[in-house]
Image (cartoon, rainbow, N blue to C red; front, side, top):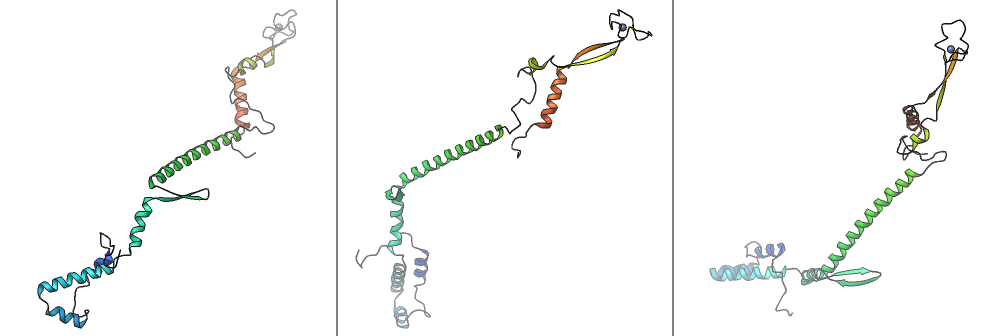
Length: 212
Ligand SMILES: [Zn+2]
């Protein structure tokens, strides 16, 4: 490109526009000699003169081509560094890389969440010294009923109803055999066993995440 030609933007910058309209000859600002010449011109000549001044002012204030051309080159490719090497890849390739990287990061974050949940679960399952893992309730399903029902009995001694009103218990009484009282075994009911157990769980169970 020689000095007869100049690379300028298709759209004038704001600076170019301002310089363009400020180039109009003015009695106060224009060189006195030029102003006199301008005054002597015909209307058409003045219009042509103004057009030339405007053109020159806008060309003078146009930005350097470097700053104009740098941007298109930039968008044509991206310098992409990896493992100490730098390669120039197309914008499209770089976009694909960025999208994949974002997807990979999402997967890693999801895995991390699962790991955290698993860690928490392990913490909850860790049994402190003096404790063991037990069901929260006694049920037939977990085998508790078969194991415990009928195992606990209460010995109750009662006065013989037959001999109660007599001075001496009858020898050979079918109920007390002359003892005046008789023993009776009461089975602890299943509901009672379950209730005692549930009360123990309520009061003694370690709460998850409770500091030990
Ligand atoms: Zn009796």
